[in-house]
Image: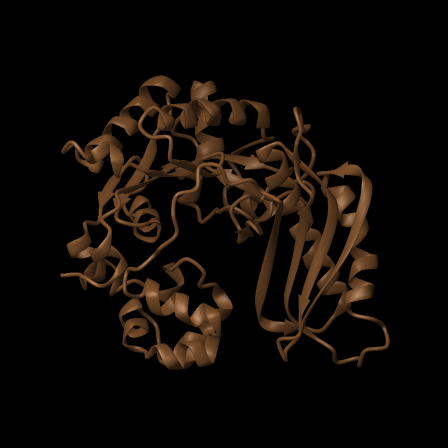
Amino acid sequence: MPDPHSEQGAERRKIIHVDMDAFFAAVEQRDHPELRGQPVIVGGDPAGRGVVATCSYEARRFGIHSAMTAARARSLCPQATFLRPRMEVYRETSRRVMGILRCYTPLVEPLSLDEAFLDVTAATADGILAAQIAREIRARIERETGLTASAGVSYNKLLAKLASDWRKPNGLFVVPPEHGLAFLAPLPVGKLHGVGPATVKKLSSMGIHTVLDLRNASREVLIAQFGKAGFWFYEVARGIDRRPVQPSRQRKSLGTERTFPENLEDAKVMLATLQQMAGQVSARLQALGLAGRTVSIKARFPDFETVTRAHTDAQAIWRAEAITACLPGLLAKAIPADLPVHASVRLLGVTVSGLTSVEVVPADAGQLSLLEEIIDLR
């Protein structure tokens, strides 16, 4: 049983995470019936430098996944149908899905076009089960949009999101409070929110591979090794996630960052990595109908010193080309030429800030790679 002094013992929230199944590809299969049951890949040109935004489950059986180069995807599945994204169609479908969710609670927090958290605590006060609400939502989405969604139900965001992935596609999974700790225990630590590849590697060196291993580590050790993040790891290992569902959050910036298993030493590789990130950020901006004014990069050195450099433009920025054009100068400022030849970085990031909504962002504004370590820097 959960500790009565913990978050779940003190407050029994009812959280649902709804996640559309292979959203972009599913929309294309819905609108083109001849593609149903076929491997479909939405993204860039496989003859160029495009990347996979998403793909159908039929394509995933060949080992294809988001953020893979389109050329690699074609080599794995030559018979796949490659489609350029139709962002306005996806946005309109997303609006219909979010409208369905808001019929059940005003506490809806969209994370992207294809997923959202709902807090249905109030809606369950009269005895209706959160799982029943999730079933109705999934049925309505399929009936009204022709698409399927998976859902996870639990007492916080952490567990609801993990649960929604448990029976994909077109599944529903519930993690009640009394099962939360047991559900988490055998999971690899990389499944936890906030634990990236570099952290997995460091935890592994400490003999921590599963959430149960993490739970057995002392708070003092985790904080000593990871700082503030150590306290987060200590809590989530115990099924504690205090984050509320935030229906009205407003993005101020959007970006992606990556910690590398091995430090990067070659400036050309650093720039190429930043350019790839620019494509990811551009894709995310156009998916959400946003543009910004400032491009910034982050570089973290092996001693954990972190620098950021920024450029502000008078024109709205959303295209990959516009973001990429800023990168050589920003990288030169972040890592000056007079640094030792062996200077290296353990983390790089690209962010666009000063965001505003735009009515129409062209669908070809940038190559798509929507699902790789996108970080919302609010």
